[in-house]
Image 1 (cartoon, rainbow over the protein chains, first blue to last red):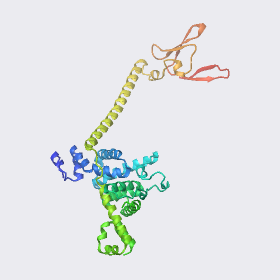
Image 2: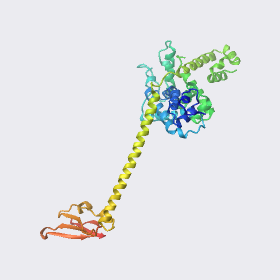
Image 3: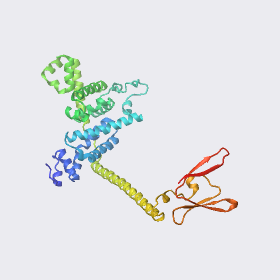
Image 4: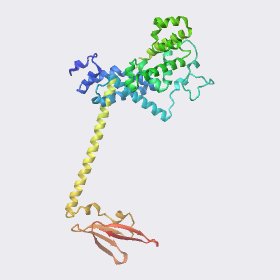
Length: 205
Length: 179
């Protein structure tokens, strides 16, 4: 258990739950440490869902503020990271669904791959086939960018489990707790996501 | 092993390609070798995505700053509501006290006696009607300009329910039905 001195809080080996507890006892630096621990991961994760860096930063901030507001309600039933990712997922998906309602089209970067005059996918098949892109040898970071774009083009039910399991490197158990889905469902969605990505990245992989 | 089985395993975990049973199959199946190569590269690129982006510098300070700001603003709103409510309560108390003093304990006069008939009914009064509180506050004096006959002073009870009656010849009649 944590004693409430600032020196203790500065110990980065402390468990997340202990840091949250320290924050609730009045040690603000404890929360700083939690934010520092997860900020980059969350920005990456949310950006994977909504594909907009600036907004990902805003939504990450909103996630932490929601954690602060509800910190006293956290009961430790799940790991702190599970709780944090669940909040982030809800916020990001709300944003995504809000965009759909507003009719914002955010696959711009994906469709930039298509040159004028080339055949475009039909409206009911918006997942881009990246074989339309020039087939020159790509650097690893270029391939990673194409992968990111392809991930963004996946349907939400495949994208979110894939990001949590493969990009955030969480266990199936954690992902199923975050998404409130059976582990079997999570496994099959991740599996399907990989097959779809392989298909979309034909000529890139 | 069959191709479907091998590919299922490789999708789940590309490192299984090194397992003896799977590697034996891969040695003799070019489709599955391609599949293995694709999945291995997908796995490697996925790792690249893990740390591709970073939060801005001093992000944690901004989080706590904004949280503090929201808290303050929440407190300000709550405080504003409380102050407004207190102010309304205070004004109501002052009004009732004043009314009790002026009307021998009858609350209705101050609350309902209109300052002018026009204001009370919303109907224009061409003759000019003014209402003033009576000496004792038990009645209201209404001064009506009746033209040729000069001013008429009516002493009316403090609460009057006034109805307007429309007639076919477009004359408007007022009548008090209760007080």
